[in-house]
Image (cartoon, rainbow, N blue to C red):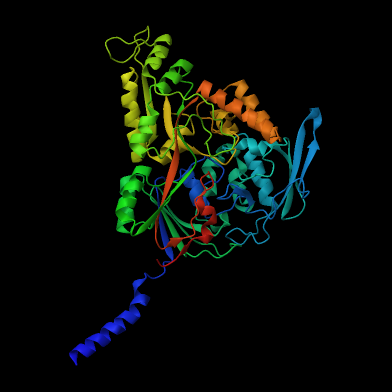
Length: 555
């Protein structure tokens, strides 16, 4: 009788086991990233952490999807010459401009219920084109000479250049006119008065699937479903983005359950992810996404040492980048010869390698007046030592390891390098943005396919106090030849002719070396097996722009 009862109980437990084995569906998702945004204003500064968070709270008019195809998000239809929404026009002086028409998604509303309208479009344009607003990509707004408003949803941009990118306005990040106009009453103080920083939980700042409900500076940002969102209802009721700047601590929080998912855009280093996957593949899936992520060192060309191109080339030749990427990343992150990834169709295959050559580096330093006696640091004729400072984001284990390798390799040719790091929100929010680094700043640029580098290389994009630090040319690079190439590339509609211009531009970049190219990153996305719907893009537009597709699925 006892045996029969035991068998019956076992059968009963077996019958109910499948229903209890799977974890209950989660309605809260905790995401770990390595940076906390320096600002939440969509148009001021260019920190990836900000873009990642705002990807959940708003939508750009246009973006590139995971297949690197330009698509509409906030707009209804992409303008083309064929559908009549784009029209080339002749301008005075023999120039060619373009008129492009967009219609805002009919259901779009700010989180306070106010419709998203062309009033917001015109106001955003006013802010973006003002020379003292502090907007990072101001050039885009200044090219728009006029906005013709058809009605509350439809508008036409009159642009003074017919660019091959004429349909792409991903940088046109809308601001709520009904809330932000008072803060803009004094444009010189706008970046310190914007509600995106002074009142970031105001629901009227957001019109995406989520709205921000809590901001704990340096710690976390909490978001909840936005009841006015016009698209599909997102699966998670609440999302918390936790900033854990130390990547070892980020991994520990993932394993403890304090974090559910580590974002690939701002997460574990490649070497950490490989080791993590080997140990925990039963609980987590790791997706490695190569893409347009360019790790490099910006050089402050106002520094008289770095103003000498011979010194810049010597710095690059003294680095064994093949050994660096091989030892730290198992060769999975290719050495960069320039800023454009081999996956991008405009990539030039014949760029100089600048391969490891310490002998040539020494010769260049000698020629630049930095001599070496007895194996110590180099000095100039006045007895000043060749000392440079290298900065990066504190807590990023990979970058700190790279720093140490670079410091050691440069020491071999007599260059003394001092390391100083800062939390990302300070490093990006103040030091880099305002060009306060004295010599070298190591970080990554994320770009879109065939992204014209006007904001990073054109002389008009150098941040200065008199433009309220607008622009992203943090090196201070100013070359009329580069300016002219950028301007020609933008307006060349013929693909093959544009390819040739890109080829020339990349060779000029490799010759002048305003930046030291390091490698292209492959970002690891570390996901619990129950999380579905994340599709890495491999470019500057983050996965969170499609967060309404993320969902819980029992493994």
